[in-house]
Each structure stands twice: as C-alpha cells, then as structure tokens.
Length: 424
Ligand SMILES: *Cc1c(COP(=O)(O)O)cnc(C)c1O
Image (cartoon, rainbow, N blue to C red; front, side):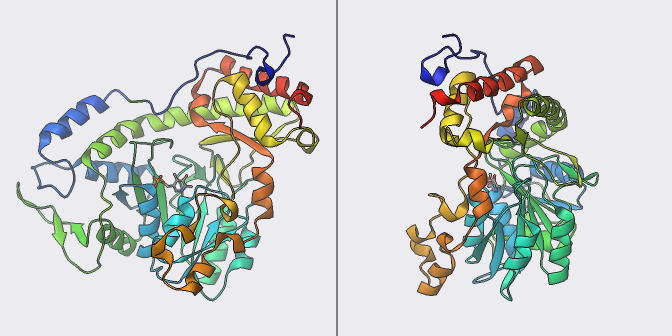
C-alpha cells in the first residue's frame, strides 16, 4: 500500500517544509525604523532634507529596467490604469487584454471607463497570441496590453510590429516578470510603458505596491499627475518643511502614491531579486528536465527570451491522463503528496467569477457600455483549454534545494502511475 496516493489515504510523498514567501532581507528593519522616525512617511508629507526612499527606489528600478523613468505607485492595478490613461486611453475606448491572467488586467481597463477586449493566448506560451490581437483590432482600439504570463515572455517582436503598424501604444504588464529579459534587454522597456505589481505574491514585493517605467517623458509626467492628485515632484530645490509635490493642476489625478515604508522594503528586496531569480531558474530548468523524462511538457516562452523569471511553474497534463482524471483532481492529488498548493491557472476572463462588471453600479453608465464590457461575449478556446489541462505552483517552491525539487517530479510520477485511484 506504500504506493497509495495521499489523496486516497496513503502516505504523503514528502513532509518537507517548503520555502515561504515573502522573505525579508537584512536591511529592511533598519530602513523601516529610519522611515518611522524620519517625519516623512510618504512623498506627500513635507520634505525633511534628504532624498525620499520613493525617489531612491524610482531611480534604482528605472536603472534595473534600463528605462529612463520610473513612477512608483500604490498597486499594480493603479499602475496599469495610470499607464493606459497616460497614453491617452479613456471612456469607451477599446483595450486589448489577454484572456488568461489575473482579473486586474481587465479591472484596470474598466477603472478608466474603457472596454476590455479579451483576446486568446498562444497554446505554448499562454501569453497573448499576436494573430488573435491583429484580428481583434477595430477602429475603436486605443491600446494593447500584454502580460508576460507565469514564467514566459510574450512574443514582443510580433506585438511591437502590430502596435507600430496600427499606431497603438503597447503596455507591458510585467506583474509576473520582474527581471525577465528579451533580446538581452529587460521586459517593461519595450512598450510605451511597462507596469509592475509589487503585491505580496510577486517576485519583487513590499506587500502592496506598483510601478510604471517608460522612456517617454510625457507619459511619465502624466503618470505623476495621475497618481498624486495632479501634483508632480519639484525639479528645483525644496526647503525643509516644504512640500516636494508641486500643484500644477495640468491633469487631474487621484491618489496612488507608494508610501515610504513600502519604498524602503522594495529597495531591500530589489537587492535580492537577481540572486533569487537565478536560483529559481536553476531549479525550474532542473525540474523541466525531470518532468520531460516523464513525458510532461512545461510552459514554453517566446523565442526571443533571454532570461525567464518564474512567477509560477506550469506543467501541462497529457490528454490521456485528463481522460482518466480532471485537472482539478490531479492538482489536489499533487497538493496532498507535496504539502504545498498545486492549482489550475487563472480562470479565463470570459468565465471568471471575479470579472463581473455588471455587479458594480459604477459601470452602469448606459446599457450599451454594459453590453460592451460583458466578458461572456468573448470566445477564448485556447485559454479555456490551458485552464483545463495545466497545473501550476508558486515561485517560492523553486527556492528549495535541488533534492527537494526532485520530490516534485517524484510526486508527478506517483500521481500519474496511480491516476486511476483519482479518476472520475
Ligand atoms: C498581480 C497582478 C496585477 C495587479 O497588481 P496589484 O498590485 O495586485 O494591483 C496586474 N496584472 C497581473 C498579471 C497580475 O498578476
């Protein structure tokens, strides 16, 4: 009975402690104490005679992304909405959104009264399919957003070509891709703007945070206005006790500023990111090899990718296995063997309980708008197939030593060998 699956009452394959996320670095406590006693907890507090953590993080992250400018924000969702608005997108405009992603990719578009047009993904990379993008463009399209999803980089060459031919801004949503590169250049620096989330699950995190990077000074200036109630940071000198934010009023905004506490934690985490990415990549490549020996395929990335960043690790389950047991049962069986959460991908956005604009009265501007933003009007066959055939787990697991990583392939083998125990 040693082989019985844990989900069927057998022994677990391993009882190991897996790495957890987030993980604090060594400088954070000192920096947080420094913020606490500095008299300045956010950039909208008076200047205290030294550069804010927010400015330090903006400079460091722009540099990291090899972009000219960075505007930090309170969340990734705010960064995406601000990026779109800073590129001139507004009420009623159509925005291309990938169909397989976190709900924020759609809610940020709805948040500026625009219309998310859900577009299907590539069956190998699970990122936006360029041919489907081309087919979805209409005379009302005003922007393309692309997510570098899970552990892949999207086909940026094709997407940039489409964006250029149609005169549309490309916004890269890099919420999963801190540190990934394409053609040896960091993601986020290819589109008109790149946006990042630093929410607690992400590869670079301070709990809740976000950022926009761009080389376009006008986009950055509009983003600054939009995230700080129509104010921008003064370029000239500031006296202690004065506001560093200057009220221009050129463009009305709202508040999505990143606090000094969050910026201090991000500076600490940024110093760790490359080392963690390298460890995750080593583990992921090792695991992909082991799973390959079992005939299992992992998520691919676009040919131009030079560095992957593993936010989640995705494994496709073969059709003959799915014919015996559905993917959710397989995910639960793997969870039971390993002791960490193995799950399906995001639910496709045309059939996702979190993507329900009709539940919110603010979107009932008129009946026509509610029809245009109804997610059910889109067909996403590839995203649906991916959702029904792929299992995934989080990046923190990939920080485990390689002998622990071997337990993961052993668990896949055990579940596949005994799949009839969990079959329908
Ligand atoms: C997490 C995430 C966001 C939103 O970020 P928040 O910081 O949670 O607002 C946007 N897009 C994608 C793809 C994400 O995974």
